[in-house]
Amino acid sequence: MIMSKAIIQIDANNFYASCEQMIDPSIKGKGLVILSNNDGCIIARNSEARKMGIPMGKPYFKLKNKLNQLNINVRSSNYELYGDISNRLMQLLRKNCEELEIYSIDEAFATIKRPSNKYLYQWGSELRGLIYQNIGIPISIGIGDTKVQSKIANHIAKKIKKNSGLFDISIIENKDYFLSQIRIDEVWGVGKRMSEWLRIRGIHNAKDLRNMSSMKLREKYGIVGIRIQRELNGEKCIPLQVKQPDRKEICISRSFGYPIDSLAELKKAIAKFVISGSQKLRKYNQSTSMITIFTNTSHYSEGFFKSEAKAKLEIPSDDTITILKPCLELTNKIFKPYKKLIKAGIIMSNLQSKKYQQNILFNIQDVKQEIKRNKLNKIIDSINTKNGRETLNWSSSVLDKEWSPRRNKISTFKTTKIESIPIIFAN
DNA sequence: TCTGGGGTCCTAGGACCC
DNA sequence: TCTGGGGTCCTAGGACCC
Image (cartoon, rainbow, N blue to C red):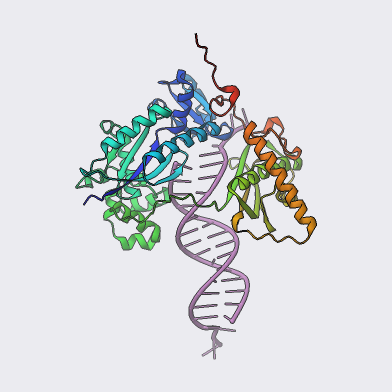
């Protein structure tokens, strides 16, 4: 039976690579890889680089020579650019679907009613054309009765060329052939550990998983496993999240360009994280009452060291200075001399919406100070939004150049910075 | 020299209460 | 000899996602 409402899964192909190629057409058709923060690992590549055998997730320094030999272009990740393109993409999708769930920077789920002949191929190929024409990014579309099915359909859309980036698994009467083509670890929700466990029991592909004993699956993986199995079978268990739920925590962490071993430097880094974390809080209209800060040495060297410390805030806050104070005190706790720290971060949790928050302020002085700081934060945020992050900064957080994360191969911000918009001379 | 960052959900176990 | 039972809340850790 074909359901009248289809679940659609849309994702941008090789999103980061596509964005880079879109703003710099001179690298089109050539191999391209994108590096993680700090130019650490390869986190994205275009199809040309994939065909040349460049793996995902591997450290850059190990592949540098190979990339050079193969003449593959390299870019540091440019999240401002990707975020901006993503916003445009989602806006267009929203206009052309019924309900939309923005699932990640380059993925969305949506629903759409089937036309009377049940076929969504025309709608889908028009949408692909529209996105490419307006944004310059190729997308793939998978269609099914559930989220898990639509992810699988998308996979097939990408895998088989003649599908031209679009596949509807719902209208396939007997899905066995297609499900048996999907490796168990390619099923959405089945990760490394689970696929190992399943393989040992002879479950190798999506079809096997759909057909296996629910009892066994439930025993080991509980409701999580059962949901995946039922969704494979066309039963909706994972609902679309149309309204973006409030965030539950905010985590900001970075690896340093070079190891640090002084308390002063660690404090600067933590301060920087607190500043951007509290800015995020204000953007989402939330406040935090629990802060964790952490740091660690390299996993790859002798004597791995990590430490963390927590503080509760009496009154939930989104104010930079209020949050900064306990964090700087905590930094004394997590710091240990002579340890070469390569990473640090903060986690703000127990987030709550400011809408429902009761302000427990004890005296008129507190109220006055609160109002003052709110005003100050607002001004700083708006200046930084308009003129680029870190136009205005706190002196406690100015990073020494050498250990700021490396981004040596960053593309220019062609869509988000006025000064890097290309100049075109017309005759 | 060199190995990312930011999330969510679920479960088990401990603390605590009556 | 023998040490309740049920509920809730919190936390840590595992697993997964992009």
